[in-house]
Length: 154
Ligand code: ADP
Image 1 (spheres, rainbow, N blue to C red):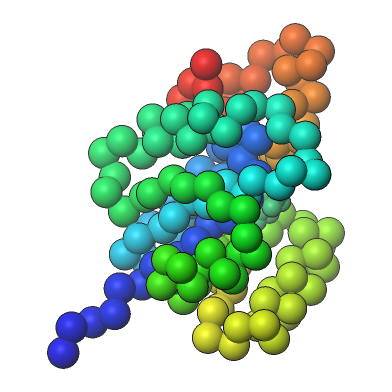
Image 2: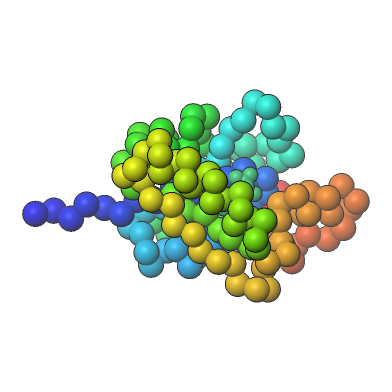
């Protein structure tokens, strides 16, 4: 019998994709056959980097890795998972604030779709302070962000 492929969706804004996101994705690689980095497109949220730039940036980091795909979606995350036959949602945890927030979303998702499991990976301590929000703030003030962004976004 053919084994079912373990497909995970890694949802987020990735505005921009940071070394923290990369650490979570790299740790998750041995666990799954395919990981779809899913950029949620939300008309209510104001983008900093255009979607195309975010996609190309992430793709440029994983050009040699056929396990990684990058897509955008506008639906509920669980509906996107169903569309992609993904049984897993991947999320990263930095601290207790992340945990509180993520726990409610994961519990809600389980109620909506009991067959989809959320998998949490804890960030390596050296990346615990890295967030897209802080990176955007640094850019606004003209600071160097190269330490926090893998590869090059421009
Ligand atoms: P969202 O807007 O959905 O929170 P983000 O792009 O900010 O999207 O984050 C996507 C996922 O990556 C989330 O699970 C978030 O907790 C995780 N993440 C972000 N930064 C880090 C980091 N430095 N270490 C570990 N996980 C992180």
